[in-house]
Length: 309
Image 1 (spheres, rainbow, N blue to C red):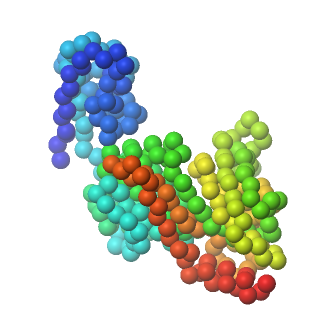
Image 2: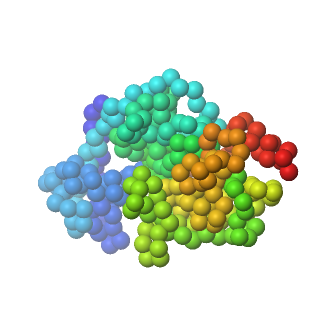
Image 3: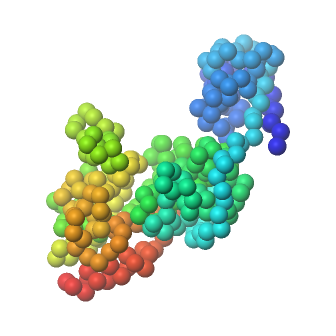
């Protein structure tokens, strides 16, 4: 596949007087960071001379040429792994991920991941959004089941990234917890960072440290020893809902990292499921809502808890 060549002429708009701002208007399918990378990589020239920097000033009549190289092959192998596809179009795919499946290859998980499965289903997604994690715009923990969306082209990847960055995506999770939260409905604002004592874990940080993490929750059902909660995370920090449940004093049932050492129900994964995703798709104005029902193993656990009450 050869490089894509795009040529533009700057007409003197003061709002786009620097190179990177001008290119954002010319190539809206690319993020500003991606375009800055092309400039720094020598893929952009002004009047036939390689651009010096992203903020280089343009004068009226300047001709700008952009050479867009084809996506870098990821080196990842597509695998014939069944996918529960909730929705698909030319821009994206919404998948109901099962518990136990890692989202992308990493140390100790070189194969069998969601990315391997998606590349097996659609090899053209290789290289979209970056060679290590083609198509990904958000993640789910290995043992968390539910909805995850992946982009099928650069324009869609940029659009979806912006939707998540601007917090326009509404995510809804279902969590069964030990005990109950302090109030039936509430909001948690507790920053999250890497646990200094356990580098593979995250932790709630003291004020002024870590990254902002905000969640809201609603009680759906109350049992003698457990509570079924609906969570709405407003940020997307690693292990956010699991940590916020621990912070509230009601850890997620079956969470071997942040929960009780001895599980209170018969379960072999944590009870956390990405149930609903509300998002505006590329080229659409109104949001769409996608849902994935609780998997059978979590339905069984919930039935057992209800029966014991």
